[in-house]
Length: 414
Image (cartoon, rainbow, N blue to C red; front, side, top):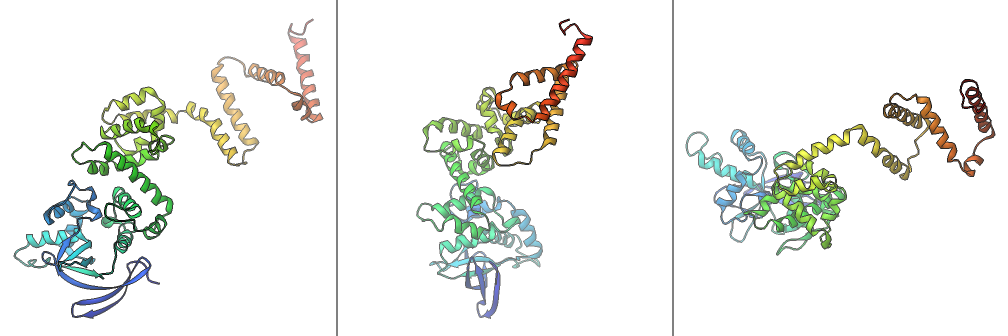
């Protein structure tokens, strides 16, 4: 069975060749043909790759081309096309104006236009004037376009792969819709076309919803959507931070509005040097001094605090204090692999710490104190649980110990 995007057949015609290509779960008949990059094709203003552009809107093809030139991977693809030419056809759909709207491949069109303007003479003159295009049928719907783009840019890699912000925005608008455009499919169907799990899609959708709240908070900035795109990795990490993340995403609960505003101000003020710093948000929030430093807006202060938190958590004292909770959670999960060797290891650890804490005190005195505390805490149930042989062994040991006390000290009462 053909995979998504696989060409099943090619038949030459007067206007190119007919291809049968599987997109999503459906096989489509496409026509592949060369088009003039200047006169025959038009760029698509809703191209997802343009969503992180410096500009909020696009009023002309010149604006669209300029935005594509600053998109990731542009220079590398330009060099490749100049050296070896266009390798993959673009996807277009004929419009009522007679032009073909570029639904996939706008960067390649922009590069070909740039190179055609550059080489106006010499052996490369005219080499970049045409673009090889696959013409989608007129009944290829907006939903089908979403399936096509998901298969290329999320399943794909390299230059054609989208960044996290674009993926998240695409997921949200495909599932929830956008002004003038209803939802196109549910999360499960989109996840299937993306080649991802439902939970992966759900997480990115939630992160984009969080980013939308950030955009509302920073609406006084020159380009809030551009800022959200730049900070998206940090925003995503904050939205899933331990304990605090769920509070930040609880948009209906006014009790967390102030907390969310404080965190958004931290992001705007660039206190997080990298998204990994946001992983310690719970630790920062639990420390009033650290939280006050974050609220001060000092640039990259979170990175310094994260380093301090990591140093503390890697200290043996921090690991020991976390051990009871770690073991308790393991037991609650039903992990029953603990044995006497684990007890012996822990006891050895205790002995080492006791030697350090009670420096100069003979270990036997500590052991005797521990035994005394254990005996004083004994209950009826503890005694009934003992085997007769264990009681006899204890009595023999105590008799021996009591004899030594009587012979060598004045504590025996004689």
